[in-house]
Image (cartoon, rainbow, N blue to C red; front, side):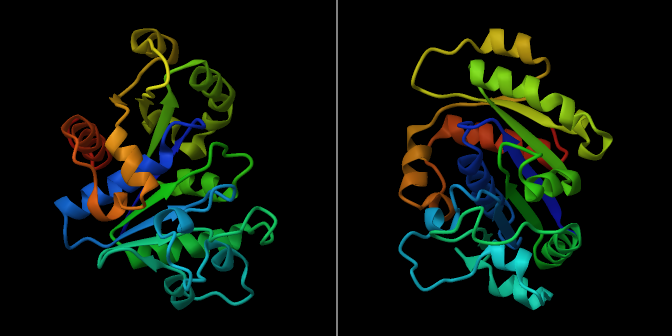
Length: 246
């Protein structure tokens, strides 16, 4: 059965970049593994981010969640192939929260069941709320492991305080979250103070200009990042997700 990794966290914590970098890393270390990256964001659709020049692809996660008839073959028709082994399922250009009706639990269960049958690894790029996004909530509930990313600032600290009461519900397996700081380059950040304020933190993902450029150029899934420090952090995160050493 496929492993599901949910990438969740505060706004601006590079969730999408981290999800794409993890997919690229896993594809390099396990070249025979099939990987699906699922983008849940309805305000920043993932399809035009990873394939801005592909005007012909009309597939969408929204269709999977809302079409009257839905089978496993329908899921596969809505997968965008990026490489031979990496696929993306998400919202398409000009789609938003009002494009499709809100999905029900039966359809969400179907989608996750079919996803498990379609790949070895499912990496879900979540939104920043488990209350406002049913897909995010279901991803965390069904995840093998969840990564919670925090910006190293007041925004990340306040986010932790607001979400913790919700996540402590037993269904979210909050105690098993991998919590990491995602650094930025816009201002000085006090990692020690944030660690002290947030409690346990498993690691730090450094800001990487090359990762930002690869994301902006839509080549992160294809090419990865040529930065040793950043790749070391992604490798460490992948090892924790796989149940290995940090």
